[in-house]
Image 1: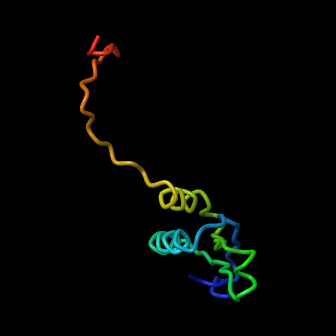
Image 2: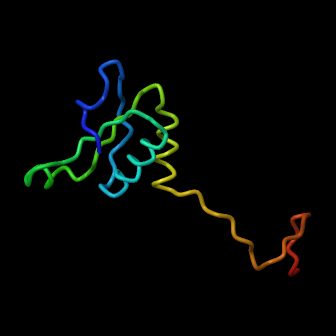
Length: 97
């Protein structure tokens, strides 16, 4: 995970969200793959971890929508379509009736 001082000075960041450490790492990997500038505020120290458990991720504000899509796919992965066991009538009628 990157820290604020690793971001170029010309890049302005906005808060993407607070995530579990596991989700934060996955999102960071996705942001890096998409070449989106980001940094994360990770709770450090014994006492800080007591009241602050989330990893807060900040991203380049010009690519916020793309970053939200990456985060959404980590938090709520796109389900793969699975064939159903029941036959569906194209008219919408229940085939069992």
